[in-house]
Length: 197
Image (tube, rainbow, N blue to C red):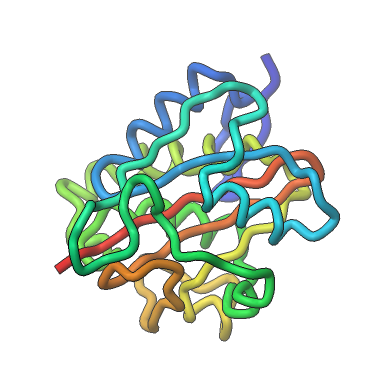
């Protein structure tokens, strides 16, 4: 088993199916989405669209989560269609974000309005949740690229996302949605949270 330092300096074991499943179940509870697809295109945005349209399967056969809200008579999005139809130019409003900040975003997806104040026992669970987020992003390797629709990353890709201010460029017709896209040479991941009224 290999070991390496995470972005937060913690020693983490190599990501396995078991550690992945545990981390995904920990981070992605209600009103969330987590899926990985193979990187098939030079333009990663095409692979992200395929995942958002539920046309991709995890190339390793590992756990995916789709707890999108719905269905609702006044919304287009639902578990059968968690994201609105997209074209590659729609990704002009996602912003590069550091791995540390991306890990923080994954943790905040559990909180009310994507803040840590909405996470039960956050202070006691912070390190454990960050470890789980590190496992999830660790799957994509050291050279992976991370992007988010959180506007705070536009101004500072290294922002402390536990104390961010800003808006979200939506990919759904839910009240608010936020997430992280992970891109490696071989895989693409979409990790998202949803808020409804």
